[in-house]
Length: 561
Ligand SMILES: [Cu+2]
Image 1 (cartoon, helix red, strand yellow):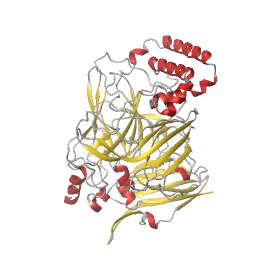
Image 2 (cartoon, rainbow, N blue to C red; image 1 turned 120 degrees about the vertical axis):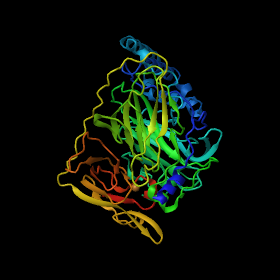
Image 3 (cartoon, protein in one colour; image 1 turned 135 degrees about the horizontal axis):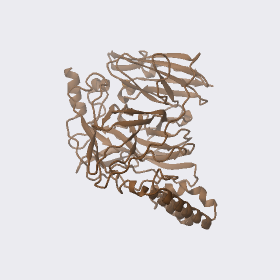
Image 4 (cartoon, protein in one colour; image 1 turned 45 degrees about the vertical axis):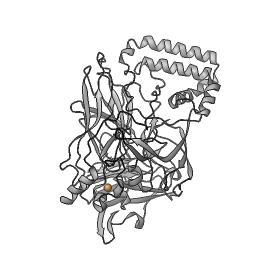
């Protein structure tokens, strides 16, 4: 107990969370208006869309020039590009169409303007977005550079962190389901790295696992990631080399793949990249090997909680207005168990997009690597304030003992009159259960050993470097049983394929959903069914407590033609 307590103190730090007044990493941009936002969305969006469409049509040449010159705000640029198909029509016809559609929308919406989110409601939280420099409507093409940069996490203190494009976290990449995503990646770090696209069903060559088959990108080098995003949902990107250290130093970002067929009016949407970072009193990063083997065993948690790179920021919505929080846990070890002290959440989606049916939950649990898509009305009275808090989650020995709750995000309602409650559109999604009759069985145990050379974690007693791959065939369905033999929980992540979690009876857990990361509790088991669509190759699976993965808790599945 002493060792873990000491370890906790060393790993978790004791510095209080403080409000950051300014943050060099965040650039405040206007949120991209949702195209097709009708009455269930809002009238202002429709008007902005209309304006942008007219602008895009009327000033295409000028826009393209500004885009190339980089002088257009990223979100404006994206809007212009989203409106690209309209440039094939005559500008005059198009302008009239837009004005007509805006005119039709506005009266039909009645007093929808009353329900607009107040200007600047998410200024402290909103992510900067990657600039799409490809004019094609179905291609998103961006540059992404990994480099060191100084950011202000604690007020008045600069911390040198590892970043994508100089910010913490990396820019939000937006695409639509079916888009081709091209990322011109440059490595300006002092170490080799890769970019892994967590959860995306892409070709194995684009997965960012080093040497499978492409080697890691050396310092000064580059790599073009180029793939289609076949599924809607919130995904994320991070290095797959020395992962605990590189992710923990700040390398992580979100990829939001929008569903063009999704009903409008689910809620005012915000992407929340939750993470933590270890910094000392001078603002320096905690060493990646702090606490030695005990640190690795527990999984190092940073002492400072971050929401989109900021410490305890505030959202300022209108009371009674429903919000949609799209959450990713990008921390290297920390589980986020979130409580609003009253309002419950409706969980409508997870890793691989929406679930079959929404479920009401009191708290949101997001293990490292997982995502949650929840709707919530956090404040109902004008001027009301509420705190989103991190609650210690029992992920094993030392995870909860003497650990207080921590503040994560402030929600402060504006003084305006509360919004009228609006009904939630139908967000259910048809998901077929995988047929597991005759499925191949795979049994894995998550194991640890103390060797003379130090701590070795592994799968079935074998660390990654000595492991033999699980064999599978394209088109095959397998049922995996993953058993935890350790005193710590493990978020189990399979690259490249979604799975369905099964109960002890072998039936899928309701409501059905597609997962790529799922918790294996202490002394517990995870069962899931996976079907291998035709993307052969060597795919990784591992614990997403990244210290565990780096200590050997990884394996491969060879999907053969
Ligand atoms: Cu683990």
